[in-house]
Length: 326
Image (cartoon, rainbow, N blue to C red; front, side, top):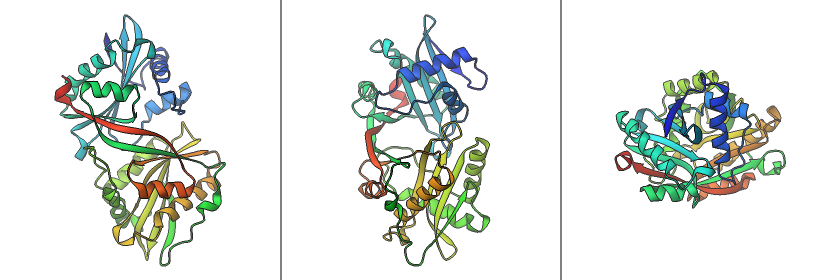
């Protein structure tokens, strides 16, 4: 069995097509996110920002592509973690392929100082969850996934009056300089959100990190949009979304966070309503807004339901020490 690193910028069409076929054929049947070949390649070339280096592996057995692996190597406070998604083609499952791939990669993970492997958005009780349990992975977080159909939603649900003493501001990509410092502080409020037992931690937001994140979004052609709540001239709450160029019908919810001193005024719901209206007015081709939150974060799930989001399947974050896989 050969595990080949695949550079999406240099690989030939045949290799990319092999990767695409295995990934699409092996996806969860309930996952309706099935991009066409060109869109999938663009995703590989411009991976979701903020999670560090992306790496792709194509696995062949006797010349036939049997599995793929998608790896992310986070940085800074998460530099001890590697996020892994291994997909084995259905025709080659139950033969130990995925286990061999993961154990092969474990040596590389250890050499790069990664001590923990995490798998994200693993369907609960699905093949990946059951396989992970057999290898010693444990569940460290439950994820509630939700989606808002912008075209058919009841837009009256978005008409939340501004809380007294607050006003709204919004911008694409770059926060105005006068709000930069307080915006970075407000982004840090996401640290109060429950995250289960995962070792992955949100960034420590500073003005410099905000600008780095914005620069990455511009470089990849992403449309990052932010709506904030201002108290005076200070940002005290925010809601962020991301639209990627190769999938313009789908919008991904980033952080929604409010500083502790300003909670209890329905600011989060207000900001999310403002964002939904902005999207429908300015980007009518966007059909869906997808989000995810902690499975037991009843408050945020309720806020999303009030917005018209519907709950999808439950997913898990699973984790295992790298040393246990070698």
